[in-house]
Image (cartoon, rainbow, N blue to C red; front, side):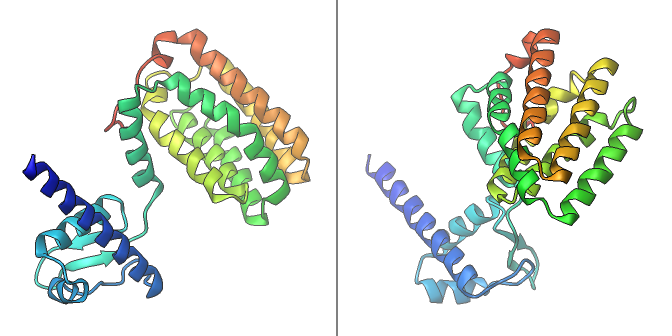
Length: 246
């Protein structure tokens, strides 16, 4: 019992230290690639045990905040957490929640239409150019093996074009988690044509700033896509999310 209590205290100290290091990274305006102080300097600065410091640094590395370089000139180097870091953490939580693909599809359906509407209000010239280029690639690959990946990329770009990074992060994260599911299914030629038709409508609505038209087109697209997946492969949409599939 005493050992459990002591381990819990050590973990709490390490987490508190990790939070302190993050605040110092922010206060120092450190950019990705910047080196943090070496271990001896950090031990003196934070006045902690070596084991506590190393546990805090390992935690930050798992979260994508730093990476640890090996060798004589190594040490902690500032990184920038990526969407994959968040997706990996979320998939672990979903694993223990017994979440399935159907739940992820319902979440996507709940937000996708509003994301498109925000994009129609806020998309920049650069966003529109990237979306148009992606749609052209989709059209060229309508019968190719890259269709599903390019399709996800279009939706990712739309999420970031919403002007709200939370929408961009969530959209991209959902696609990372569901990627393996879709690889095992794929779209029929007819479904690909339907997807392209609605994506063209979405892009035109975003380009003209018509948020309601963008919302309606995207709502029909994701609803139809979810129905297609459920009808074609009901056993697939019932599969549980498993950590490590990303």
